[in-house]
Image (cartoon, rainbow over all chains, first blue to last red; front, top):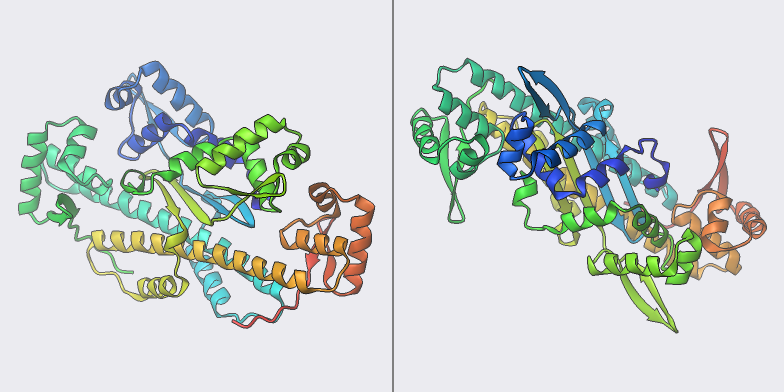
Length: 230
Length: 230
């Protein structure tokens, strides 16, 4: 019944926006780097006018933001949210977990409490407990997403400090952002394939990257020794 | 990057189908009971031809199924899945957790293991660990949904065995399915409001239902003493 009770009606607009493949491709590209219109237009082979229309819709819905730099307007994603859709014989529920909801410690202890509490004899009680648990898990999921993003931010900051040539930096940046083959890196960042490969060889030598075979396909794997203790 | 790697491309079609409000309303209705075309048409005030078109699309995508009974074709939801959409500065991921993925015990122990394992010093390791965790939580969520559905199924089976008048049974069934006001029950099942209220009074007396005030609105709450121990 979440579909009806939800205070946050934003999910309707978001799902309607995500139902369009071009917009999904644009979002995917924006997770790699902030982009301006003609850049997106070139990378995705779409007319600039169409790209701009999609960007405006996404911005109006609060999914992306933009800033001006020089004569260009850059678009980027600056919020984290998680939409969970459950379809089952007895339920059709859509829920958005947004910025304000996350609190890792609190949610962890909620989940722990729910897991340890023994069920009473009332079916309706078990029922409500399960629903609480479901909600707690969604929050955790959102928190984990946040932590992944924090980690990526930190890696990007560290990357800036490293003494590396520019192309190696871009390649490393691409790996952090989840691009895992030279082809994808070359395409997304507009660097010739050969140069990407040379940079990768240098990064392999310095121990920052290793190649892993994954079912016949060679994938690049980041080896990053940051100062993490948790 | 789940968006690109996913073997299950079904989510694209599902999201496109859910982007339509009428289809969402039909699904919502089908979680209450199996319905035939003219029944949906009447309840949602939509032309039968339009309803049929939506139903056919949903059936073709495997979201709903149908069976014939007498001269009527009933539509119902017969599968459970969970779609998780994450949008964040560095990620745009859509993942479907379907029928074959769930195994509560296994996922529970995976999560426990992930939570207890201490992070190494490699940032990229923490990174992968977080992603594993994310996936494990999604599975848990799906498992919890399954358990809620199992519970509802059990309640419906028990309901059939109870010695109650027909209207009380329908009202109780409606409550199990998440309808929590007499208005909604009356509307969804086409029973006069007064009769719903009379049945509710009887059910209150027998201790199966109680009324709870929730911010000025009176909601009905199920009191079901099943034989549950977990």
